[in-house]
Length: 174
Image (cartoon, rainbow, N blue to C red; front, side):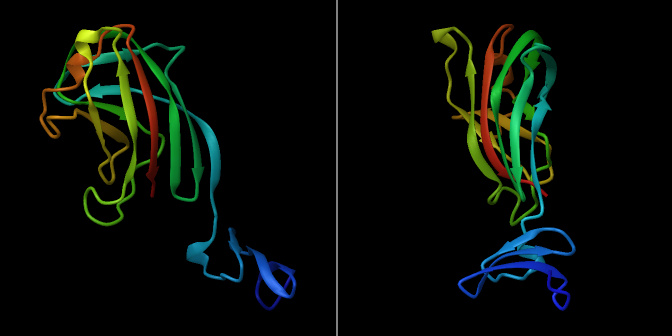
């Protein structure tokens, strides 16, 4: 413990390798900036919901409605499978809830994240390309049909009872 620096410092070959800050967080290789400290790590499950932008409902199976996540600093990795148990006239694009709000770095859509949400309808007549849009400050991922991004009446009506929704996303949180 280094009293003059208010930190616990680990050295190797006379160079700083790791620093535990008294205010919390860990820095590496001589970086002493609090803003750069790794100060959060969390693993867990998120009980997801699906909402429709225009109208209708999608109810998820109570036994297949969880997404696993790992949060390292501001980066969130989330993945899993959801199953719709019932639908009632879903309309518009659909949203999948996320465990943490999407960050507000940069412009409205800049640098939020990437990933895939795939709908397995079990019907070759109902296959479509989906685009995931992550909007700053929101706590859900918007899912649009690939050829109609931003159109309000596209993807939700493709979800049927017993359909599986696969989620794999990485995004920045606040």
